[in-house]
Image (cartoon, rainbow, N blue to C red; front, top):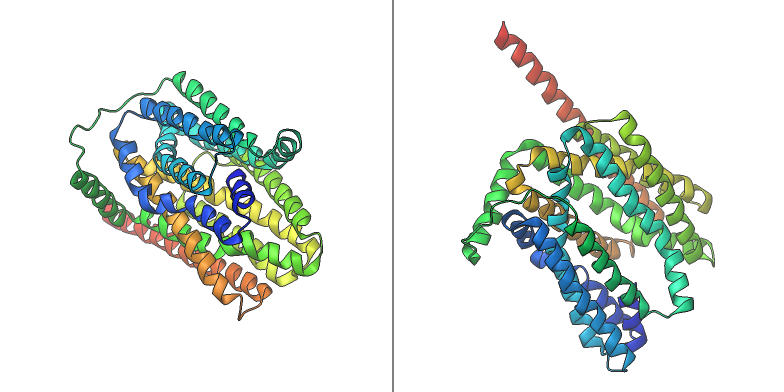
Amino acid sequence: MAYLFLAYDLTESKMLTTIMAIAETLPYLLFGLIGGVMADWLPRKRLLIFLDMIRIPLIFSVVCLYSFELLSYSYLFVISFLMQSIGCFFNPTHRTVLPAITIEEERTKVNSINDTLTRGVTVLSPFLSVWLLNSYGVIHFFTFDALTYAVSAYCISKVNIKEKRQVVNKSVQKVLRSIVEFASWAKSHTTVRKLFLFTFLTVFFNTWCWEVGLLLALSEMSSQSEELYSIIQGVFGGVVIGTNIILPIFLKKMTIQIHLVGAIIWGVGIACYGIFYGINSFFISSAIVAIGLPIAGLSRIYLIQSLVPESKMGRAFSTNAVLLYFSNTISLAIYGILVSIISIQQLMLYSGILIIITSVTGLLFSMNRTKLRGRFMINLFK
């Protein structure tokens, strides 16, 4: 948020502000897969602390230059790009830590707690943002951010992580070969391949509806669209947290079938946007999405942690992130064209229906394969 606020303050240009937003997503498409390779190759604890320590002076330099009135748009753009590029290496490495410090029976609960904390921060961040803006100004978003990286590095230093052997031969060819090797492994692993495919499709049909379509629909219905959108996000975050808390009580292990059931519930919520299409119904529809999304999300994380070997886990999480960002990008681009010829209500309805059809088809297919495999084993035993 602060990057966008400052970009607009410095330039008063909507186009340059949009380019600043692109700077926050482009690194994942460029370096996301490489970050996964590094996560599999390098000692995790040292890498995470090193990346956090690099981010502190980078982010704090923005505060210093702004204080002396020397901050430029181009410098802010470079810092934004560098910070997100570091995230390409930090995030997949961080994702591999939880499986390394927990046993399999704990993972559903631990993943749920982790996601609950993340969602909780998302719900609380608007209130923190308002307080910072009113009390200290937008520049101290960066000061606060620098402090959080210092806290992160300290906390990680206290975690006992079993380190991997460091790969010595780290050439460009070796990196590319490593990426191709994982792609080949994922292609041959049916469940992982399906997981990536269904995640890509679900996110593609969801992104525009949630990030843009809902806000546009509210702006057509009310003059207080931004306030309503913020309230809906709060309701959404609250239901997600509740789902995360309840889910581990009933589910200790996750399967691809559970992932698809979550996607179906998610799709029903999106479809309800279009079916009932009204301010009050948007709250209910968002709550339905908030039930399905964490079921699909937590099962995806659990399956990657359970099915992917530790030596490939960093590449698995980075591949997942790249697919999500790529899906987000093309969703916004394609729907941005479609909205000029198809109404928002119809786009929401069709998107929800397509998520449901895709997920139900995958669920039925996976259940049939399970039954066929069971019959084959019985006949083989006979």
